[in-house]
Length: 67
Image 1 (tube, rainbow, N blue to C red):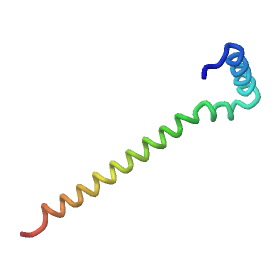
Image 2: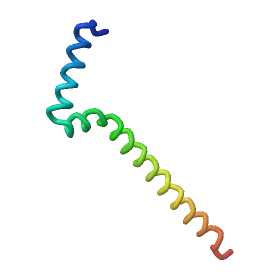
Image 3: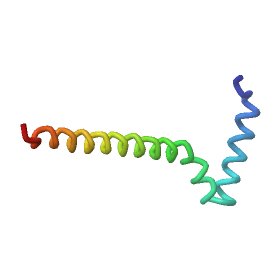
């Protein structure tokens, strides 16, 4: 559902007032989606690294195992 021109103007005005009254909160709200995305990327990267370490350890155990 698209906003009317008047609704968009009102929202822009509210955002501008928020930025003037509480810049820290305005920054947090503006970056909210980006922070979640970064956290998700970090979690995926950590899992990937953990899998690589485990695979390396298992591979090294097979290579050094006596026959």
